[in-house]
Length: 314
Image: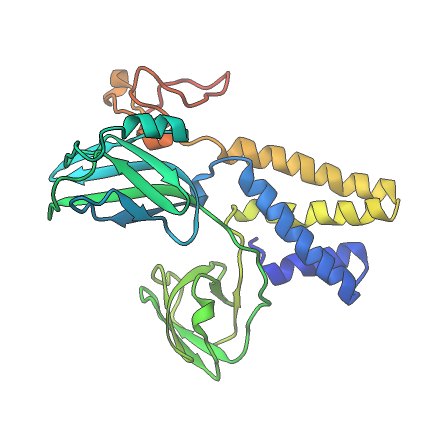
């Protein structure tokens, strides 16, 4: 079951049996610390985003997205062809690559480098092509969760529609990016746009049964898979009881956290084995995109488990 930030710190206070304002504040901070620790473990697919830029003549610098965390890959599409740029990992390497930047231009870039809050590409684009589009694949930076659940009024949801219509509600633009759930439906839907205090838009169409005058919840939902949301309060509770020198209780919650974290990593750290199809089963060889860890099919740099096969079934 998915847990909102409100539910997470409710679990924290329930399992510490301490509802004081000071403990709630500490619990919220530790939940966010645990959240960031888990996200920092790996380049999780669910934390990936893309942003586009338009290569422009004589311009080799482009702003990074506001929520940029770290780059996974950069591609440029010219006409119908895609070009995957190679990262210059150090400043010295970048300086060597662009030694002739002022005299070397091309519409087919080969390298990129992150400097401050800019993406820089090389060679410098020689023209502004209408068919050229650059794409950044990056891991987004996650900010601290902070909002309580919002449940004022009722809503109407319509099957196959993205419109949420409220009655007695005071929706705000700050709710964009949070999730909403009608209390008769198990699914959470991301809010993608604010129209008015009574109208908002879902990122994906509502799949449940049309209903009106529905009780509902809008909350901040962590981006990690919902089966592992409990990890976010297990560790803070373990820390609480450790500070109280209650080693048995602390150890219990610590073990829940460590076991769950291991299961989480094993379940979500690898992409599908069927990224490369087995020719013997009627499939074909297809390169793993550079963005996902390899340059060509016969030179993978993705880590495969000892008992996993490189060829996936069809």
